[in-house]
Length: 419
Image 1 (cartoon, rainbow, N blue to C red):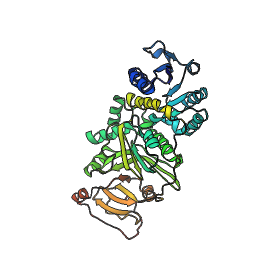
Image 2: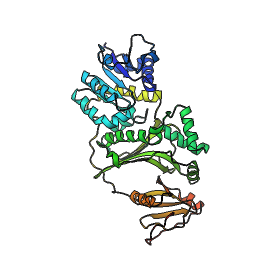
Image 3: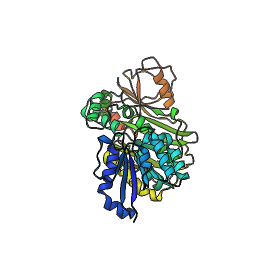
């Protein structure tokens, strides 16, 4: 019986989680694969900073040492940034190794190229860990929803931002206080920009788009907004109305391409993402046969991400070739009217007729239905306004209890400054 020999590129939180999981789950792995799984080599930046329990494992800072291992079947990459991970994986493919990656930024940029390269060399590529940690989102879309036509994907895919927003709401603290708590707990890096400004979520959205629809949207046309400008006072106000602020990715494909956004939105109790709190992640998928399904679980961390990688290791035997669907277009309205909450103290002012007023909270907010382009036009002329898209059905009973006035404006008027 031949062992399966693997190499780990990177030995941070994720790399160590994979190493420990393989060591502690040998019996289970052998029962499934019929072979032992052996870590043959580990690539690190500084050899002096690391120690391994197994003296038979090569510990090196030189990637060529990894490539020159006498037996090597699978290369697992958990390095931050586009390079050198991309180059390392291409060379691993050329050697004939299957590859697995947890690097969402690299895969967002180079995923399609890697998949095609792996196919050319007749090896497999696993990347479940690039999106939502331990949640099997990619395998679900790729293998369990083949007949279903995916119409829409929404998700909370960054645990750091979700933790911060949850703490701001539950403990009524400011953004900086919640961010500091996230850093102390290890949820946020010393430089949290990628998480709080939406870059991490953006990369994951690109991977999901490629998997679900066979292509990515034009990056420059994607709305990407972070959470750093959100006020805790606004969060408490929304809570009074039964709404929660969530940082959500949204994907939908139509004849004109992929519509994608990564931004804070308001979520009502009827929406599947409403109760996803703390560092939890969730992916909500709407498909034409099954309807809506929601996958929820830990989106990051040592063992959730290691779980995704090790499960990929199991799937490699049966999953060679492209993971990407080639979806036909799903028709959607070019720019539909959706619900928005406009925060303003001057709630008695008229709005353009392109904005359908649902209700008003005196001196606090106006609830409207409108196209995104019309909201953007309104905000361009009124810098002091803030607008949040609202997901799920609004609680009309609550609105009535707040003594909101139902108003519909049919007369087109100019928007006064400062509304």
